[in-house]
Image (cartoon, rainbow, N blue to C red; front, side):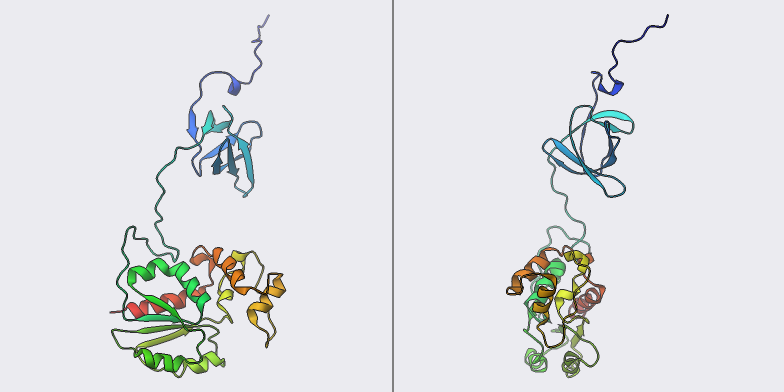
Length: 268
């Protein structure tokens, strides 16, 4: 007659010691009771969040013997605090230089149309600009660009780069830009009516930037179309700006032009 072990407890729940494994980011484990398999994306007090290969998230308690790691039963524990990892890339995608000091400002400058343009350039290219010693200033429009350029008095050792909104054939901006002919000035632009449009819609959680009829203030029209507060476009812009984390959140038509200006004003 065959004998049976009266202990019907599954093997993974028996009291044999099991290793404790830190729930480090990207560690792939399987939760024993559900079979959910995924990578650790977050670890909080008493819980761990896993993400499977389809992008689905599940939160599980970090109970003893609660997970399988490469087929072995383990107990996940909260990882010990470690020194923050220094980023290897800046927001613009260039190689980060930890501890680098800002260079003394060059005589050359980059001018942009408005405050929002300057804030966006600073958010993405700020680290690069400080290392290169390039100062960005805003103009509050380009109607007086020829006289502003003349007053700046560009020279080979003090080049001027200008970023213009809505620089497309036939536009007012293109006619003004054509009046600037100095070899020490580079005027480039993007096709968007406003710098807001240079932020990818996906970055701010919309399908597309709405079309605003001519004659209407573009920012106000956008806010009304999207149900955003239209009486404080400055606050709306700050909310948009917070969603920009790197060059990946910007349209390529802007990226190339800013890089072009930085190269121009820093050229030997």
